[in-house]
Amino acid sequence: MYIKNRRNRSKGPAWIGKVEFSKSGGTAYFNDKVFKHFGKGHYGDIETGDSYWISGIKKNGKDRHVFGKGKIQIDKLIVNEYLQLVDFV
Image (tube, rainbow, N blue to C red; front, side, top):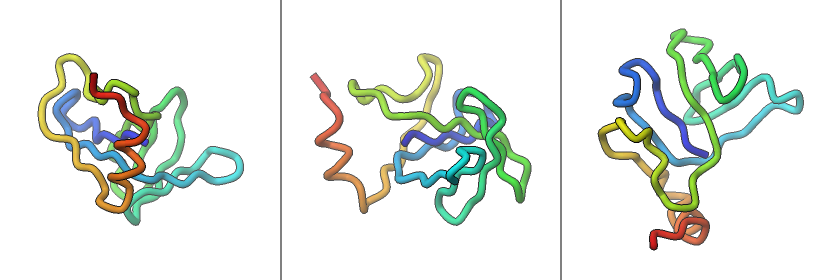
């Protein structure tokens, strides 16, 4: 999944990693954080209140918004899986 902190709009820190969801889908878990689902990819960190975007990855590898900047960190445990899913052509 693609996870981005929306604090600085399109320029917030971003990750590619494994996200687990509750059975109802109302809660997501990533990197020891718990997120409450607010609808259509929008989540909130229940501890800090920060707003996040969580979505599937794009096959072309361009997960950042067109105006977004910064590196996307990829969890080292899923690099091989990610590379098999993405077509950088």
